[in-house]
Length: 119
Image (cartoon, rainbow, N blue to C red; front, side, top):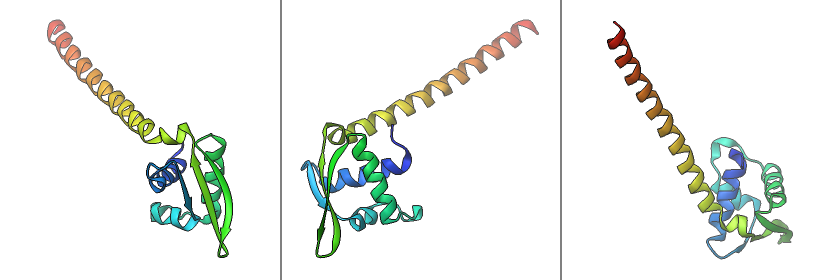
């Protein structure tokens, strides 16, 4: 399971690859997609990309183009299934919240019924 920063960076990479399976991006291009309020730095983005690479979401080759650092990113099956996994996680959380709310309502109703029986 990815933390919030890894999730944001992985979403940016997934969007930049746009279903092609690989892409050529710079840290600044990735940072332009990320939320501005988080104050991402190129070093922080690089560290997050390295951790995502270790988690087998993609292969990353670092290169340079006109003096600018570039990444060649090739998505692995985990990376290609990222959007589907994110959707499943959202559904799972929504189901757990709905189940908790339903449990609270049932508990309240049973409490009211027992209170009326024993009063």
